[in-house]
Amino acid sequence: CDDMEAMKAFYRELFPFEIRGESDTGLSFRAGSILFSLRQRTRDYDGRGPRADVPGVQLAFLVQPDEVEPCYQELVARGVEISEPTTDQPRGHRTVYFKDPEGNLLEIYAEI
Image 1 (cartoon, rainbow, N blue to C red):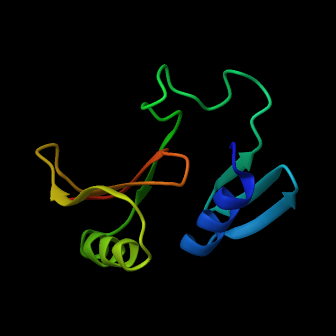
Image 2 (image 1 turned 45 degrees about the vertical axis):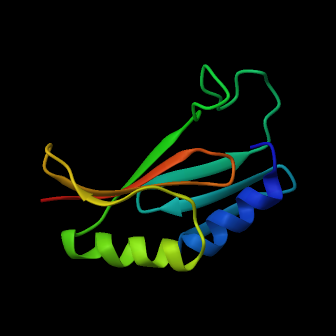
């Protein structure tokens, strides 16, 4: 992350994950069986896409089909930047795409 404080606030406030560790330069969450960590960028290649407009990371969170729309409504209510509202995709997923403060793409999806 470039702006560690903004990223910490975004993820802390948006997701109910258990915080496993925190420092000035990092934050780790337990998301089910996954350890999800944010850390300050210290190398040129850390979490960056090939261009400034391409995110370095995409995260996808699986929920039940009837949870996608309420998640979307919560994101809108919190002022989160939406990339694509709730959409039933031809690949059999109901999705909503949104961005974190640094432009990383996040997806909430369900198999339908």
